Length: 358
Image (cartoon, rainbow, N blue to C red; front, side, top):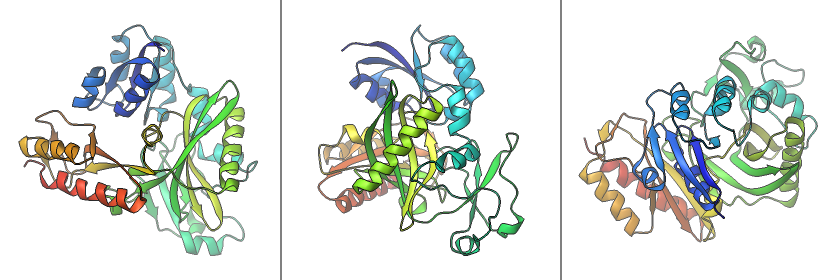
């Protein structure tokens, strides 16, 4: 069904543009990279300054509704200004101020079967858990796990939970499996989309310890775990008025499920569910381990990967320069076994890094 044009804003919008085409929209893309494959999917505007250039870019865009992807949920005042220019499909500033507030989430989770890590203050009886887990200092404007650091000061000296004027807050570190669950809220009803294992940190090639590197779908959950997550999502949507697609990052361990973050928009792992033609589907962001550029060697490698059954996405335009730690491209692989998918992605990522032109 043809739905007409849809403007998509974000740091990187290629995956959301592909979803939009599948949903019947004609995407118009505004992002930081303007990658080659995105330009093949949609009319594309590349910005240089994030997020300030979104206002003039949207003002110059066609008259059409718009949606946002990763990162912009951290700027509710900007979302409000953008929503005055074009109709917003998704969650507005009133929703964002709740679901992106760790104190609000800590109170909300008390009504659900899901746990939430302690924030800010030390509580009576928490000494054993403090010794086991430690603490994190996290930016309030978080995105993809960037900027999260371990905090080594004794818990008794922790600051109170962050105020609205603070840039960081303190959260107890919870060890376990990093996961994400995806949902869609429409007219008061929340639908389960699926869950993924999240690949985080150095082990998967990310430049920072808690930075997002990729996902593996599907994550097998027990019936009780899925029911707990769906109940939480239903209550979250009811309490905030959240609508459309959203994701909840969580940690899974022997103590239960721990909500870490709510992403009130199309998330990085959602594209995997549309690709689940095999038993497993994985994606891996390849980060540069040195400065370089997209020249003939790298383009030949990406072409050869396509021929070997590895899909390459977020393809940089010829001549694009990279600093160390910047993303080069995204790799996607399907397979019967999770270990097979992980191995093929890691081997392909090594080839990409090796052929990054100096």
